[in-house]
Image (cartoon, rainbow, N blue to C red; front, side, top):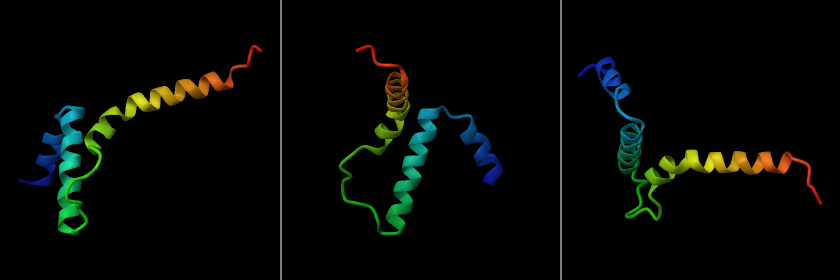
Amino acid sequence: MPLAQLFALLARLSRKEQLKIIEFLASELAKQEDLANSEPEENHFEMLHNSEEGARQLAQFLEEQKQPQNA
């Protein structure tokens, strides 16, 4: 399959499916380079999937820190 076709198919996938593919490819590359651990301690897909929520919470915290303290 030509890369252009593959890229078109990948673009149609959901964000979650695209992240799974990224995780798969990273794992495969690590295995090829003999860098893979036997069992990772953390689920990297979960970290990626939850990163938006973490970013939202951090932005909210930083915004609250900018506001003058009423003390």
